[in-house]
Image (cartoon, rainbow, N blue to C red; front, side, top):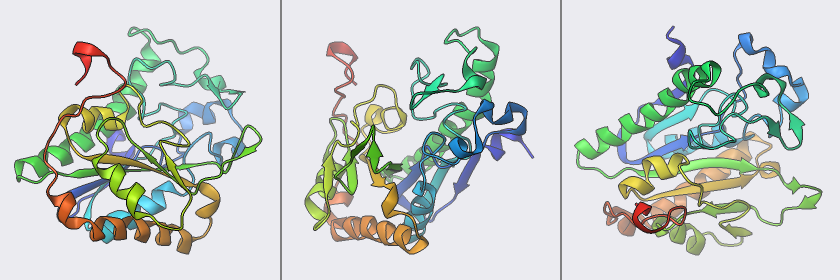
Length: 266
């Protein structure tokens, strides 16, 4: 099998109104990398991937009958949700732990291993997303992009007091709908992280093209059981269905980004 194809999980859907993506779906690291020198415990933790996110993404894409693209490699190998110029693209540290297999990789464009990982893992993932978007646009559909992530319930010893985070940059069309529609849930508005990350996945594929989008962060302890993951997928699906009319009215519109200033604002 083509190595590039092994590094991506995709599913073709009949509905082109949405595209579900999951950047940190997997903790897979090819055997040749010897787990980058990290322990099995770390490989099965948030350091390596977003626990529960892939299952929610799969359920959501099924409910929407839309296409799905997920990275089938660990973010420790290379993070698809970073720009190629981001120093954390291939992390040397993760939550205070040294990633031994990455320690000698530089940010130089001449670095052989860096370029190998970009070509073998990073670029094929983004090409798949581009391909689904192009197909929808060619069919005169605007594929609203739903990016599924998860976060740890405790960070640096402090409990995170939100259930779901809705992340966005300047284009708040979809994020507003979720923030206004989700009831009896502890919501994070651009928390626990900011949706304003220069050259991340949504910047590349949505912000820079004027495509409506939202990044959804789910707290991992709320995703322990299969029924929990399905329930969250249904909550997200219900918000989209309840607001279907207004969402269908969204056009391609470039709002720009808080990550750039002046003339670089897309």
